[in-house]
Image (cartoon, rainbow, N blue to C red; front, side):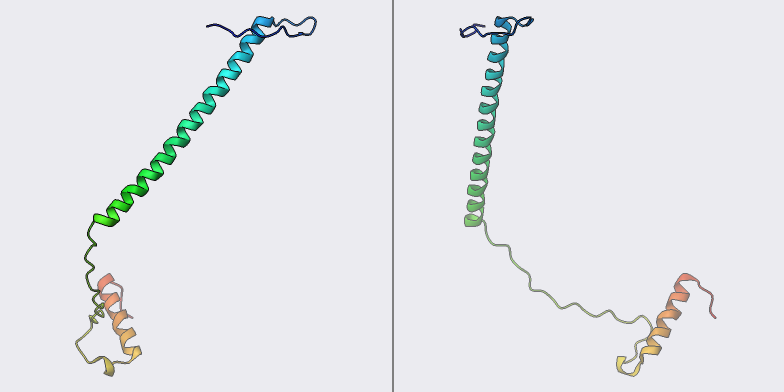
Length: 113
């Protein structure tokens, strides 16, 4: 590895760092910064390419893919009461509540009071 020639630096007296080591450290820091910038540019370019490719394929799919057939929504059928088949109009709310309680007691084995 060839180090670039730099002018001599005035190192403080008593410094244990040689001028060649200082030049080497400076060279390594510059090389690290260059590699960092190159890496960031590569990642940024890849992300831009990824976004463009995704938009392009999305446009192709929208253009050439057939629309999915939408089934008409059927209205939900009301749940039939499990008590008895009696006209709903003749059953009061208290009778419905009593029927539900009786069914729950029978299903879960609760004692009748």
